[in-house]
Structures are given as structure tokens and as C-alpha cells.
Length: 222
Image (cartoon, rainbow, N blue to C red; front, top):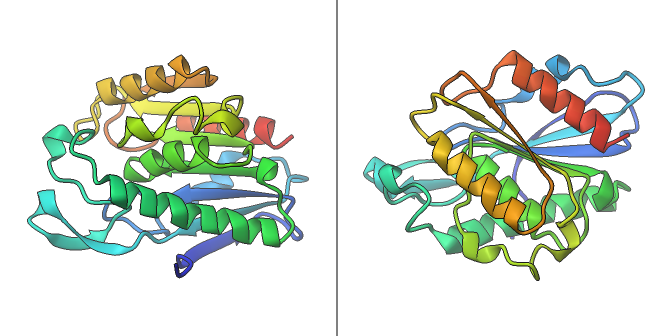
């Protein structure tokens, strides 16, 4: 598998931690680069932010239009059903390769956080919880679980105690908040510690949410 192309931002020389941040359907790795300064991370915490570009692929629910995506979506009105499980698994493997690349640069898995928005959040949830080594944390924004069958007590054993921050807009017309709540409850029922926060916004992020993410990253990487 070829490594995904990425946009990389380092907050200081010689990073001691990494955050791999996955964009949503149809966006690209540049989508969240601008929020790094808004996170309010402490100046003595050197973090490498990695924003990969998802592969280009035809999306069934968009009449086969080719765009960047982590997996195919058949119906938007059934976004968490009829999942392209093979596509999900392929993206999970691609994220594992990015984590391995960070390991090779001297960043251990327990100093790596996976974050993602919307479809990217779905992969962050899945790749993060099923990673064979414990991660520092998972951030799942405006998202859902695309393939609950991949998450079992056995597959999440290494990351059952990994902190998760899940946030969602209460007015989200794309990924309804009920899907976010369902995902949060599913992983909580597996024994995962999920911090859940909602905001009166649509399918986006807001400054208070970004600040909360910054606090979560700071605490998880302390």
C-alpha cells in the first residue's frame, strides 16, 4: 500500500507527539490546517500534525462522482448502514501505516492521537479503537460508526482505556445527532471512556469546540 500524501505542520522543532487528523467526504488534508493555532496548545508541547488526503474514488450516493473519500457511501439517508466495510478496512490499514511511519520517526503509539471530522471521524473511531497498540486519544467530530461489527471487546482490547472526545452539532443536517449519540453509546457500552459534547451548530466545528479539543490534546499528551 502506498502511503497517503499528507499536509504536515509542526508546532515546534523535534515533536514529541503526533496528531493524525482526517478530513470529511469531498474535502482534503488542508481542511483543518488553519485550526492548529486556535487549539491553544502549550508552547512547550511540540506536536506534529498530520493531515492526510483521502484517496479519490467514485461515491455511489453522489451518482458516482469521484471525490476524496475514506470509503464509499451508498445512501446519505442511510449513512451508517450498507457500509462499504472493505473500504473502511482499507482506510484503517492506511492510517495504521501513517502511525507506523510516526513510530519509525521515534513517536510511540501512546503519544499519537487520531482525530477526524464526519467520514474522517468514522475512520478515526474505527482505526483508533482497533489499533493493536494503545494510543494517546481519539477525537471524533460530527460523526458515526460506519461498521459496528468491526468493534468488539477483542478488537478494541488495546484501546479500551484510551480517552475519546466525541462532539456533535445539535442542528447537523448531514450526520444527524442521533447517529453521533448512537456511536457514543455503542463505544461506551464496550467500556470506553467517552467525553460527549454538543454545540448548537450544523455540520461544522466552532471555536468553543476547537478550544475543547485543544484542552483534550493537552491533557492526553501531558
